[in-house]
Image (cartoon, rainbow, N blue to C red):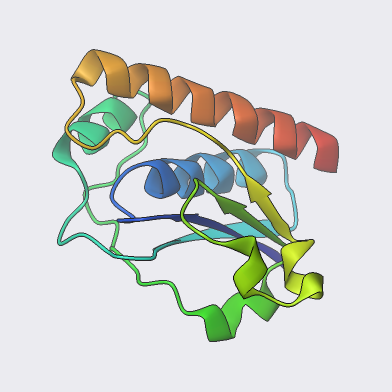
Length: 134
């Protein structure tokens, strides 16, 4: 099984949404991939408005856990998607080639309406990524 990592600063919004959407669509499309998410400076909890926005898509993040990024584990991932929270130059060239930046606004302290837009952009990118893999 191939693994993809979604990483953002707090692991409280974008990366959690990406992990959930990826695993949903990968399972639906019988893709041999699984997603994980991490944060470089993890928050104490997932943004409750993000949880609410994902519930509107029938994805439950109530029991999702915040996870801290461990640079010693990057070799296990086929692909790493960063939301601007990882510095490519920190890694060997082999790892740099696995890293892709998605410049999507941070949902921290945003309204539900704004988080819906962020959520929908992440979902669109996940669907496109999975479409390339099947």
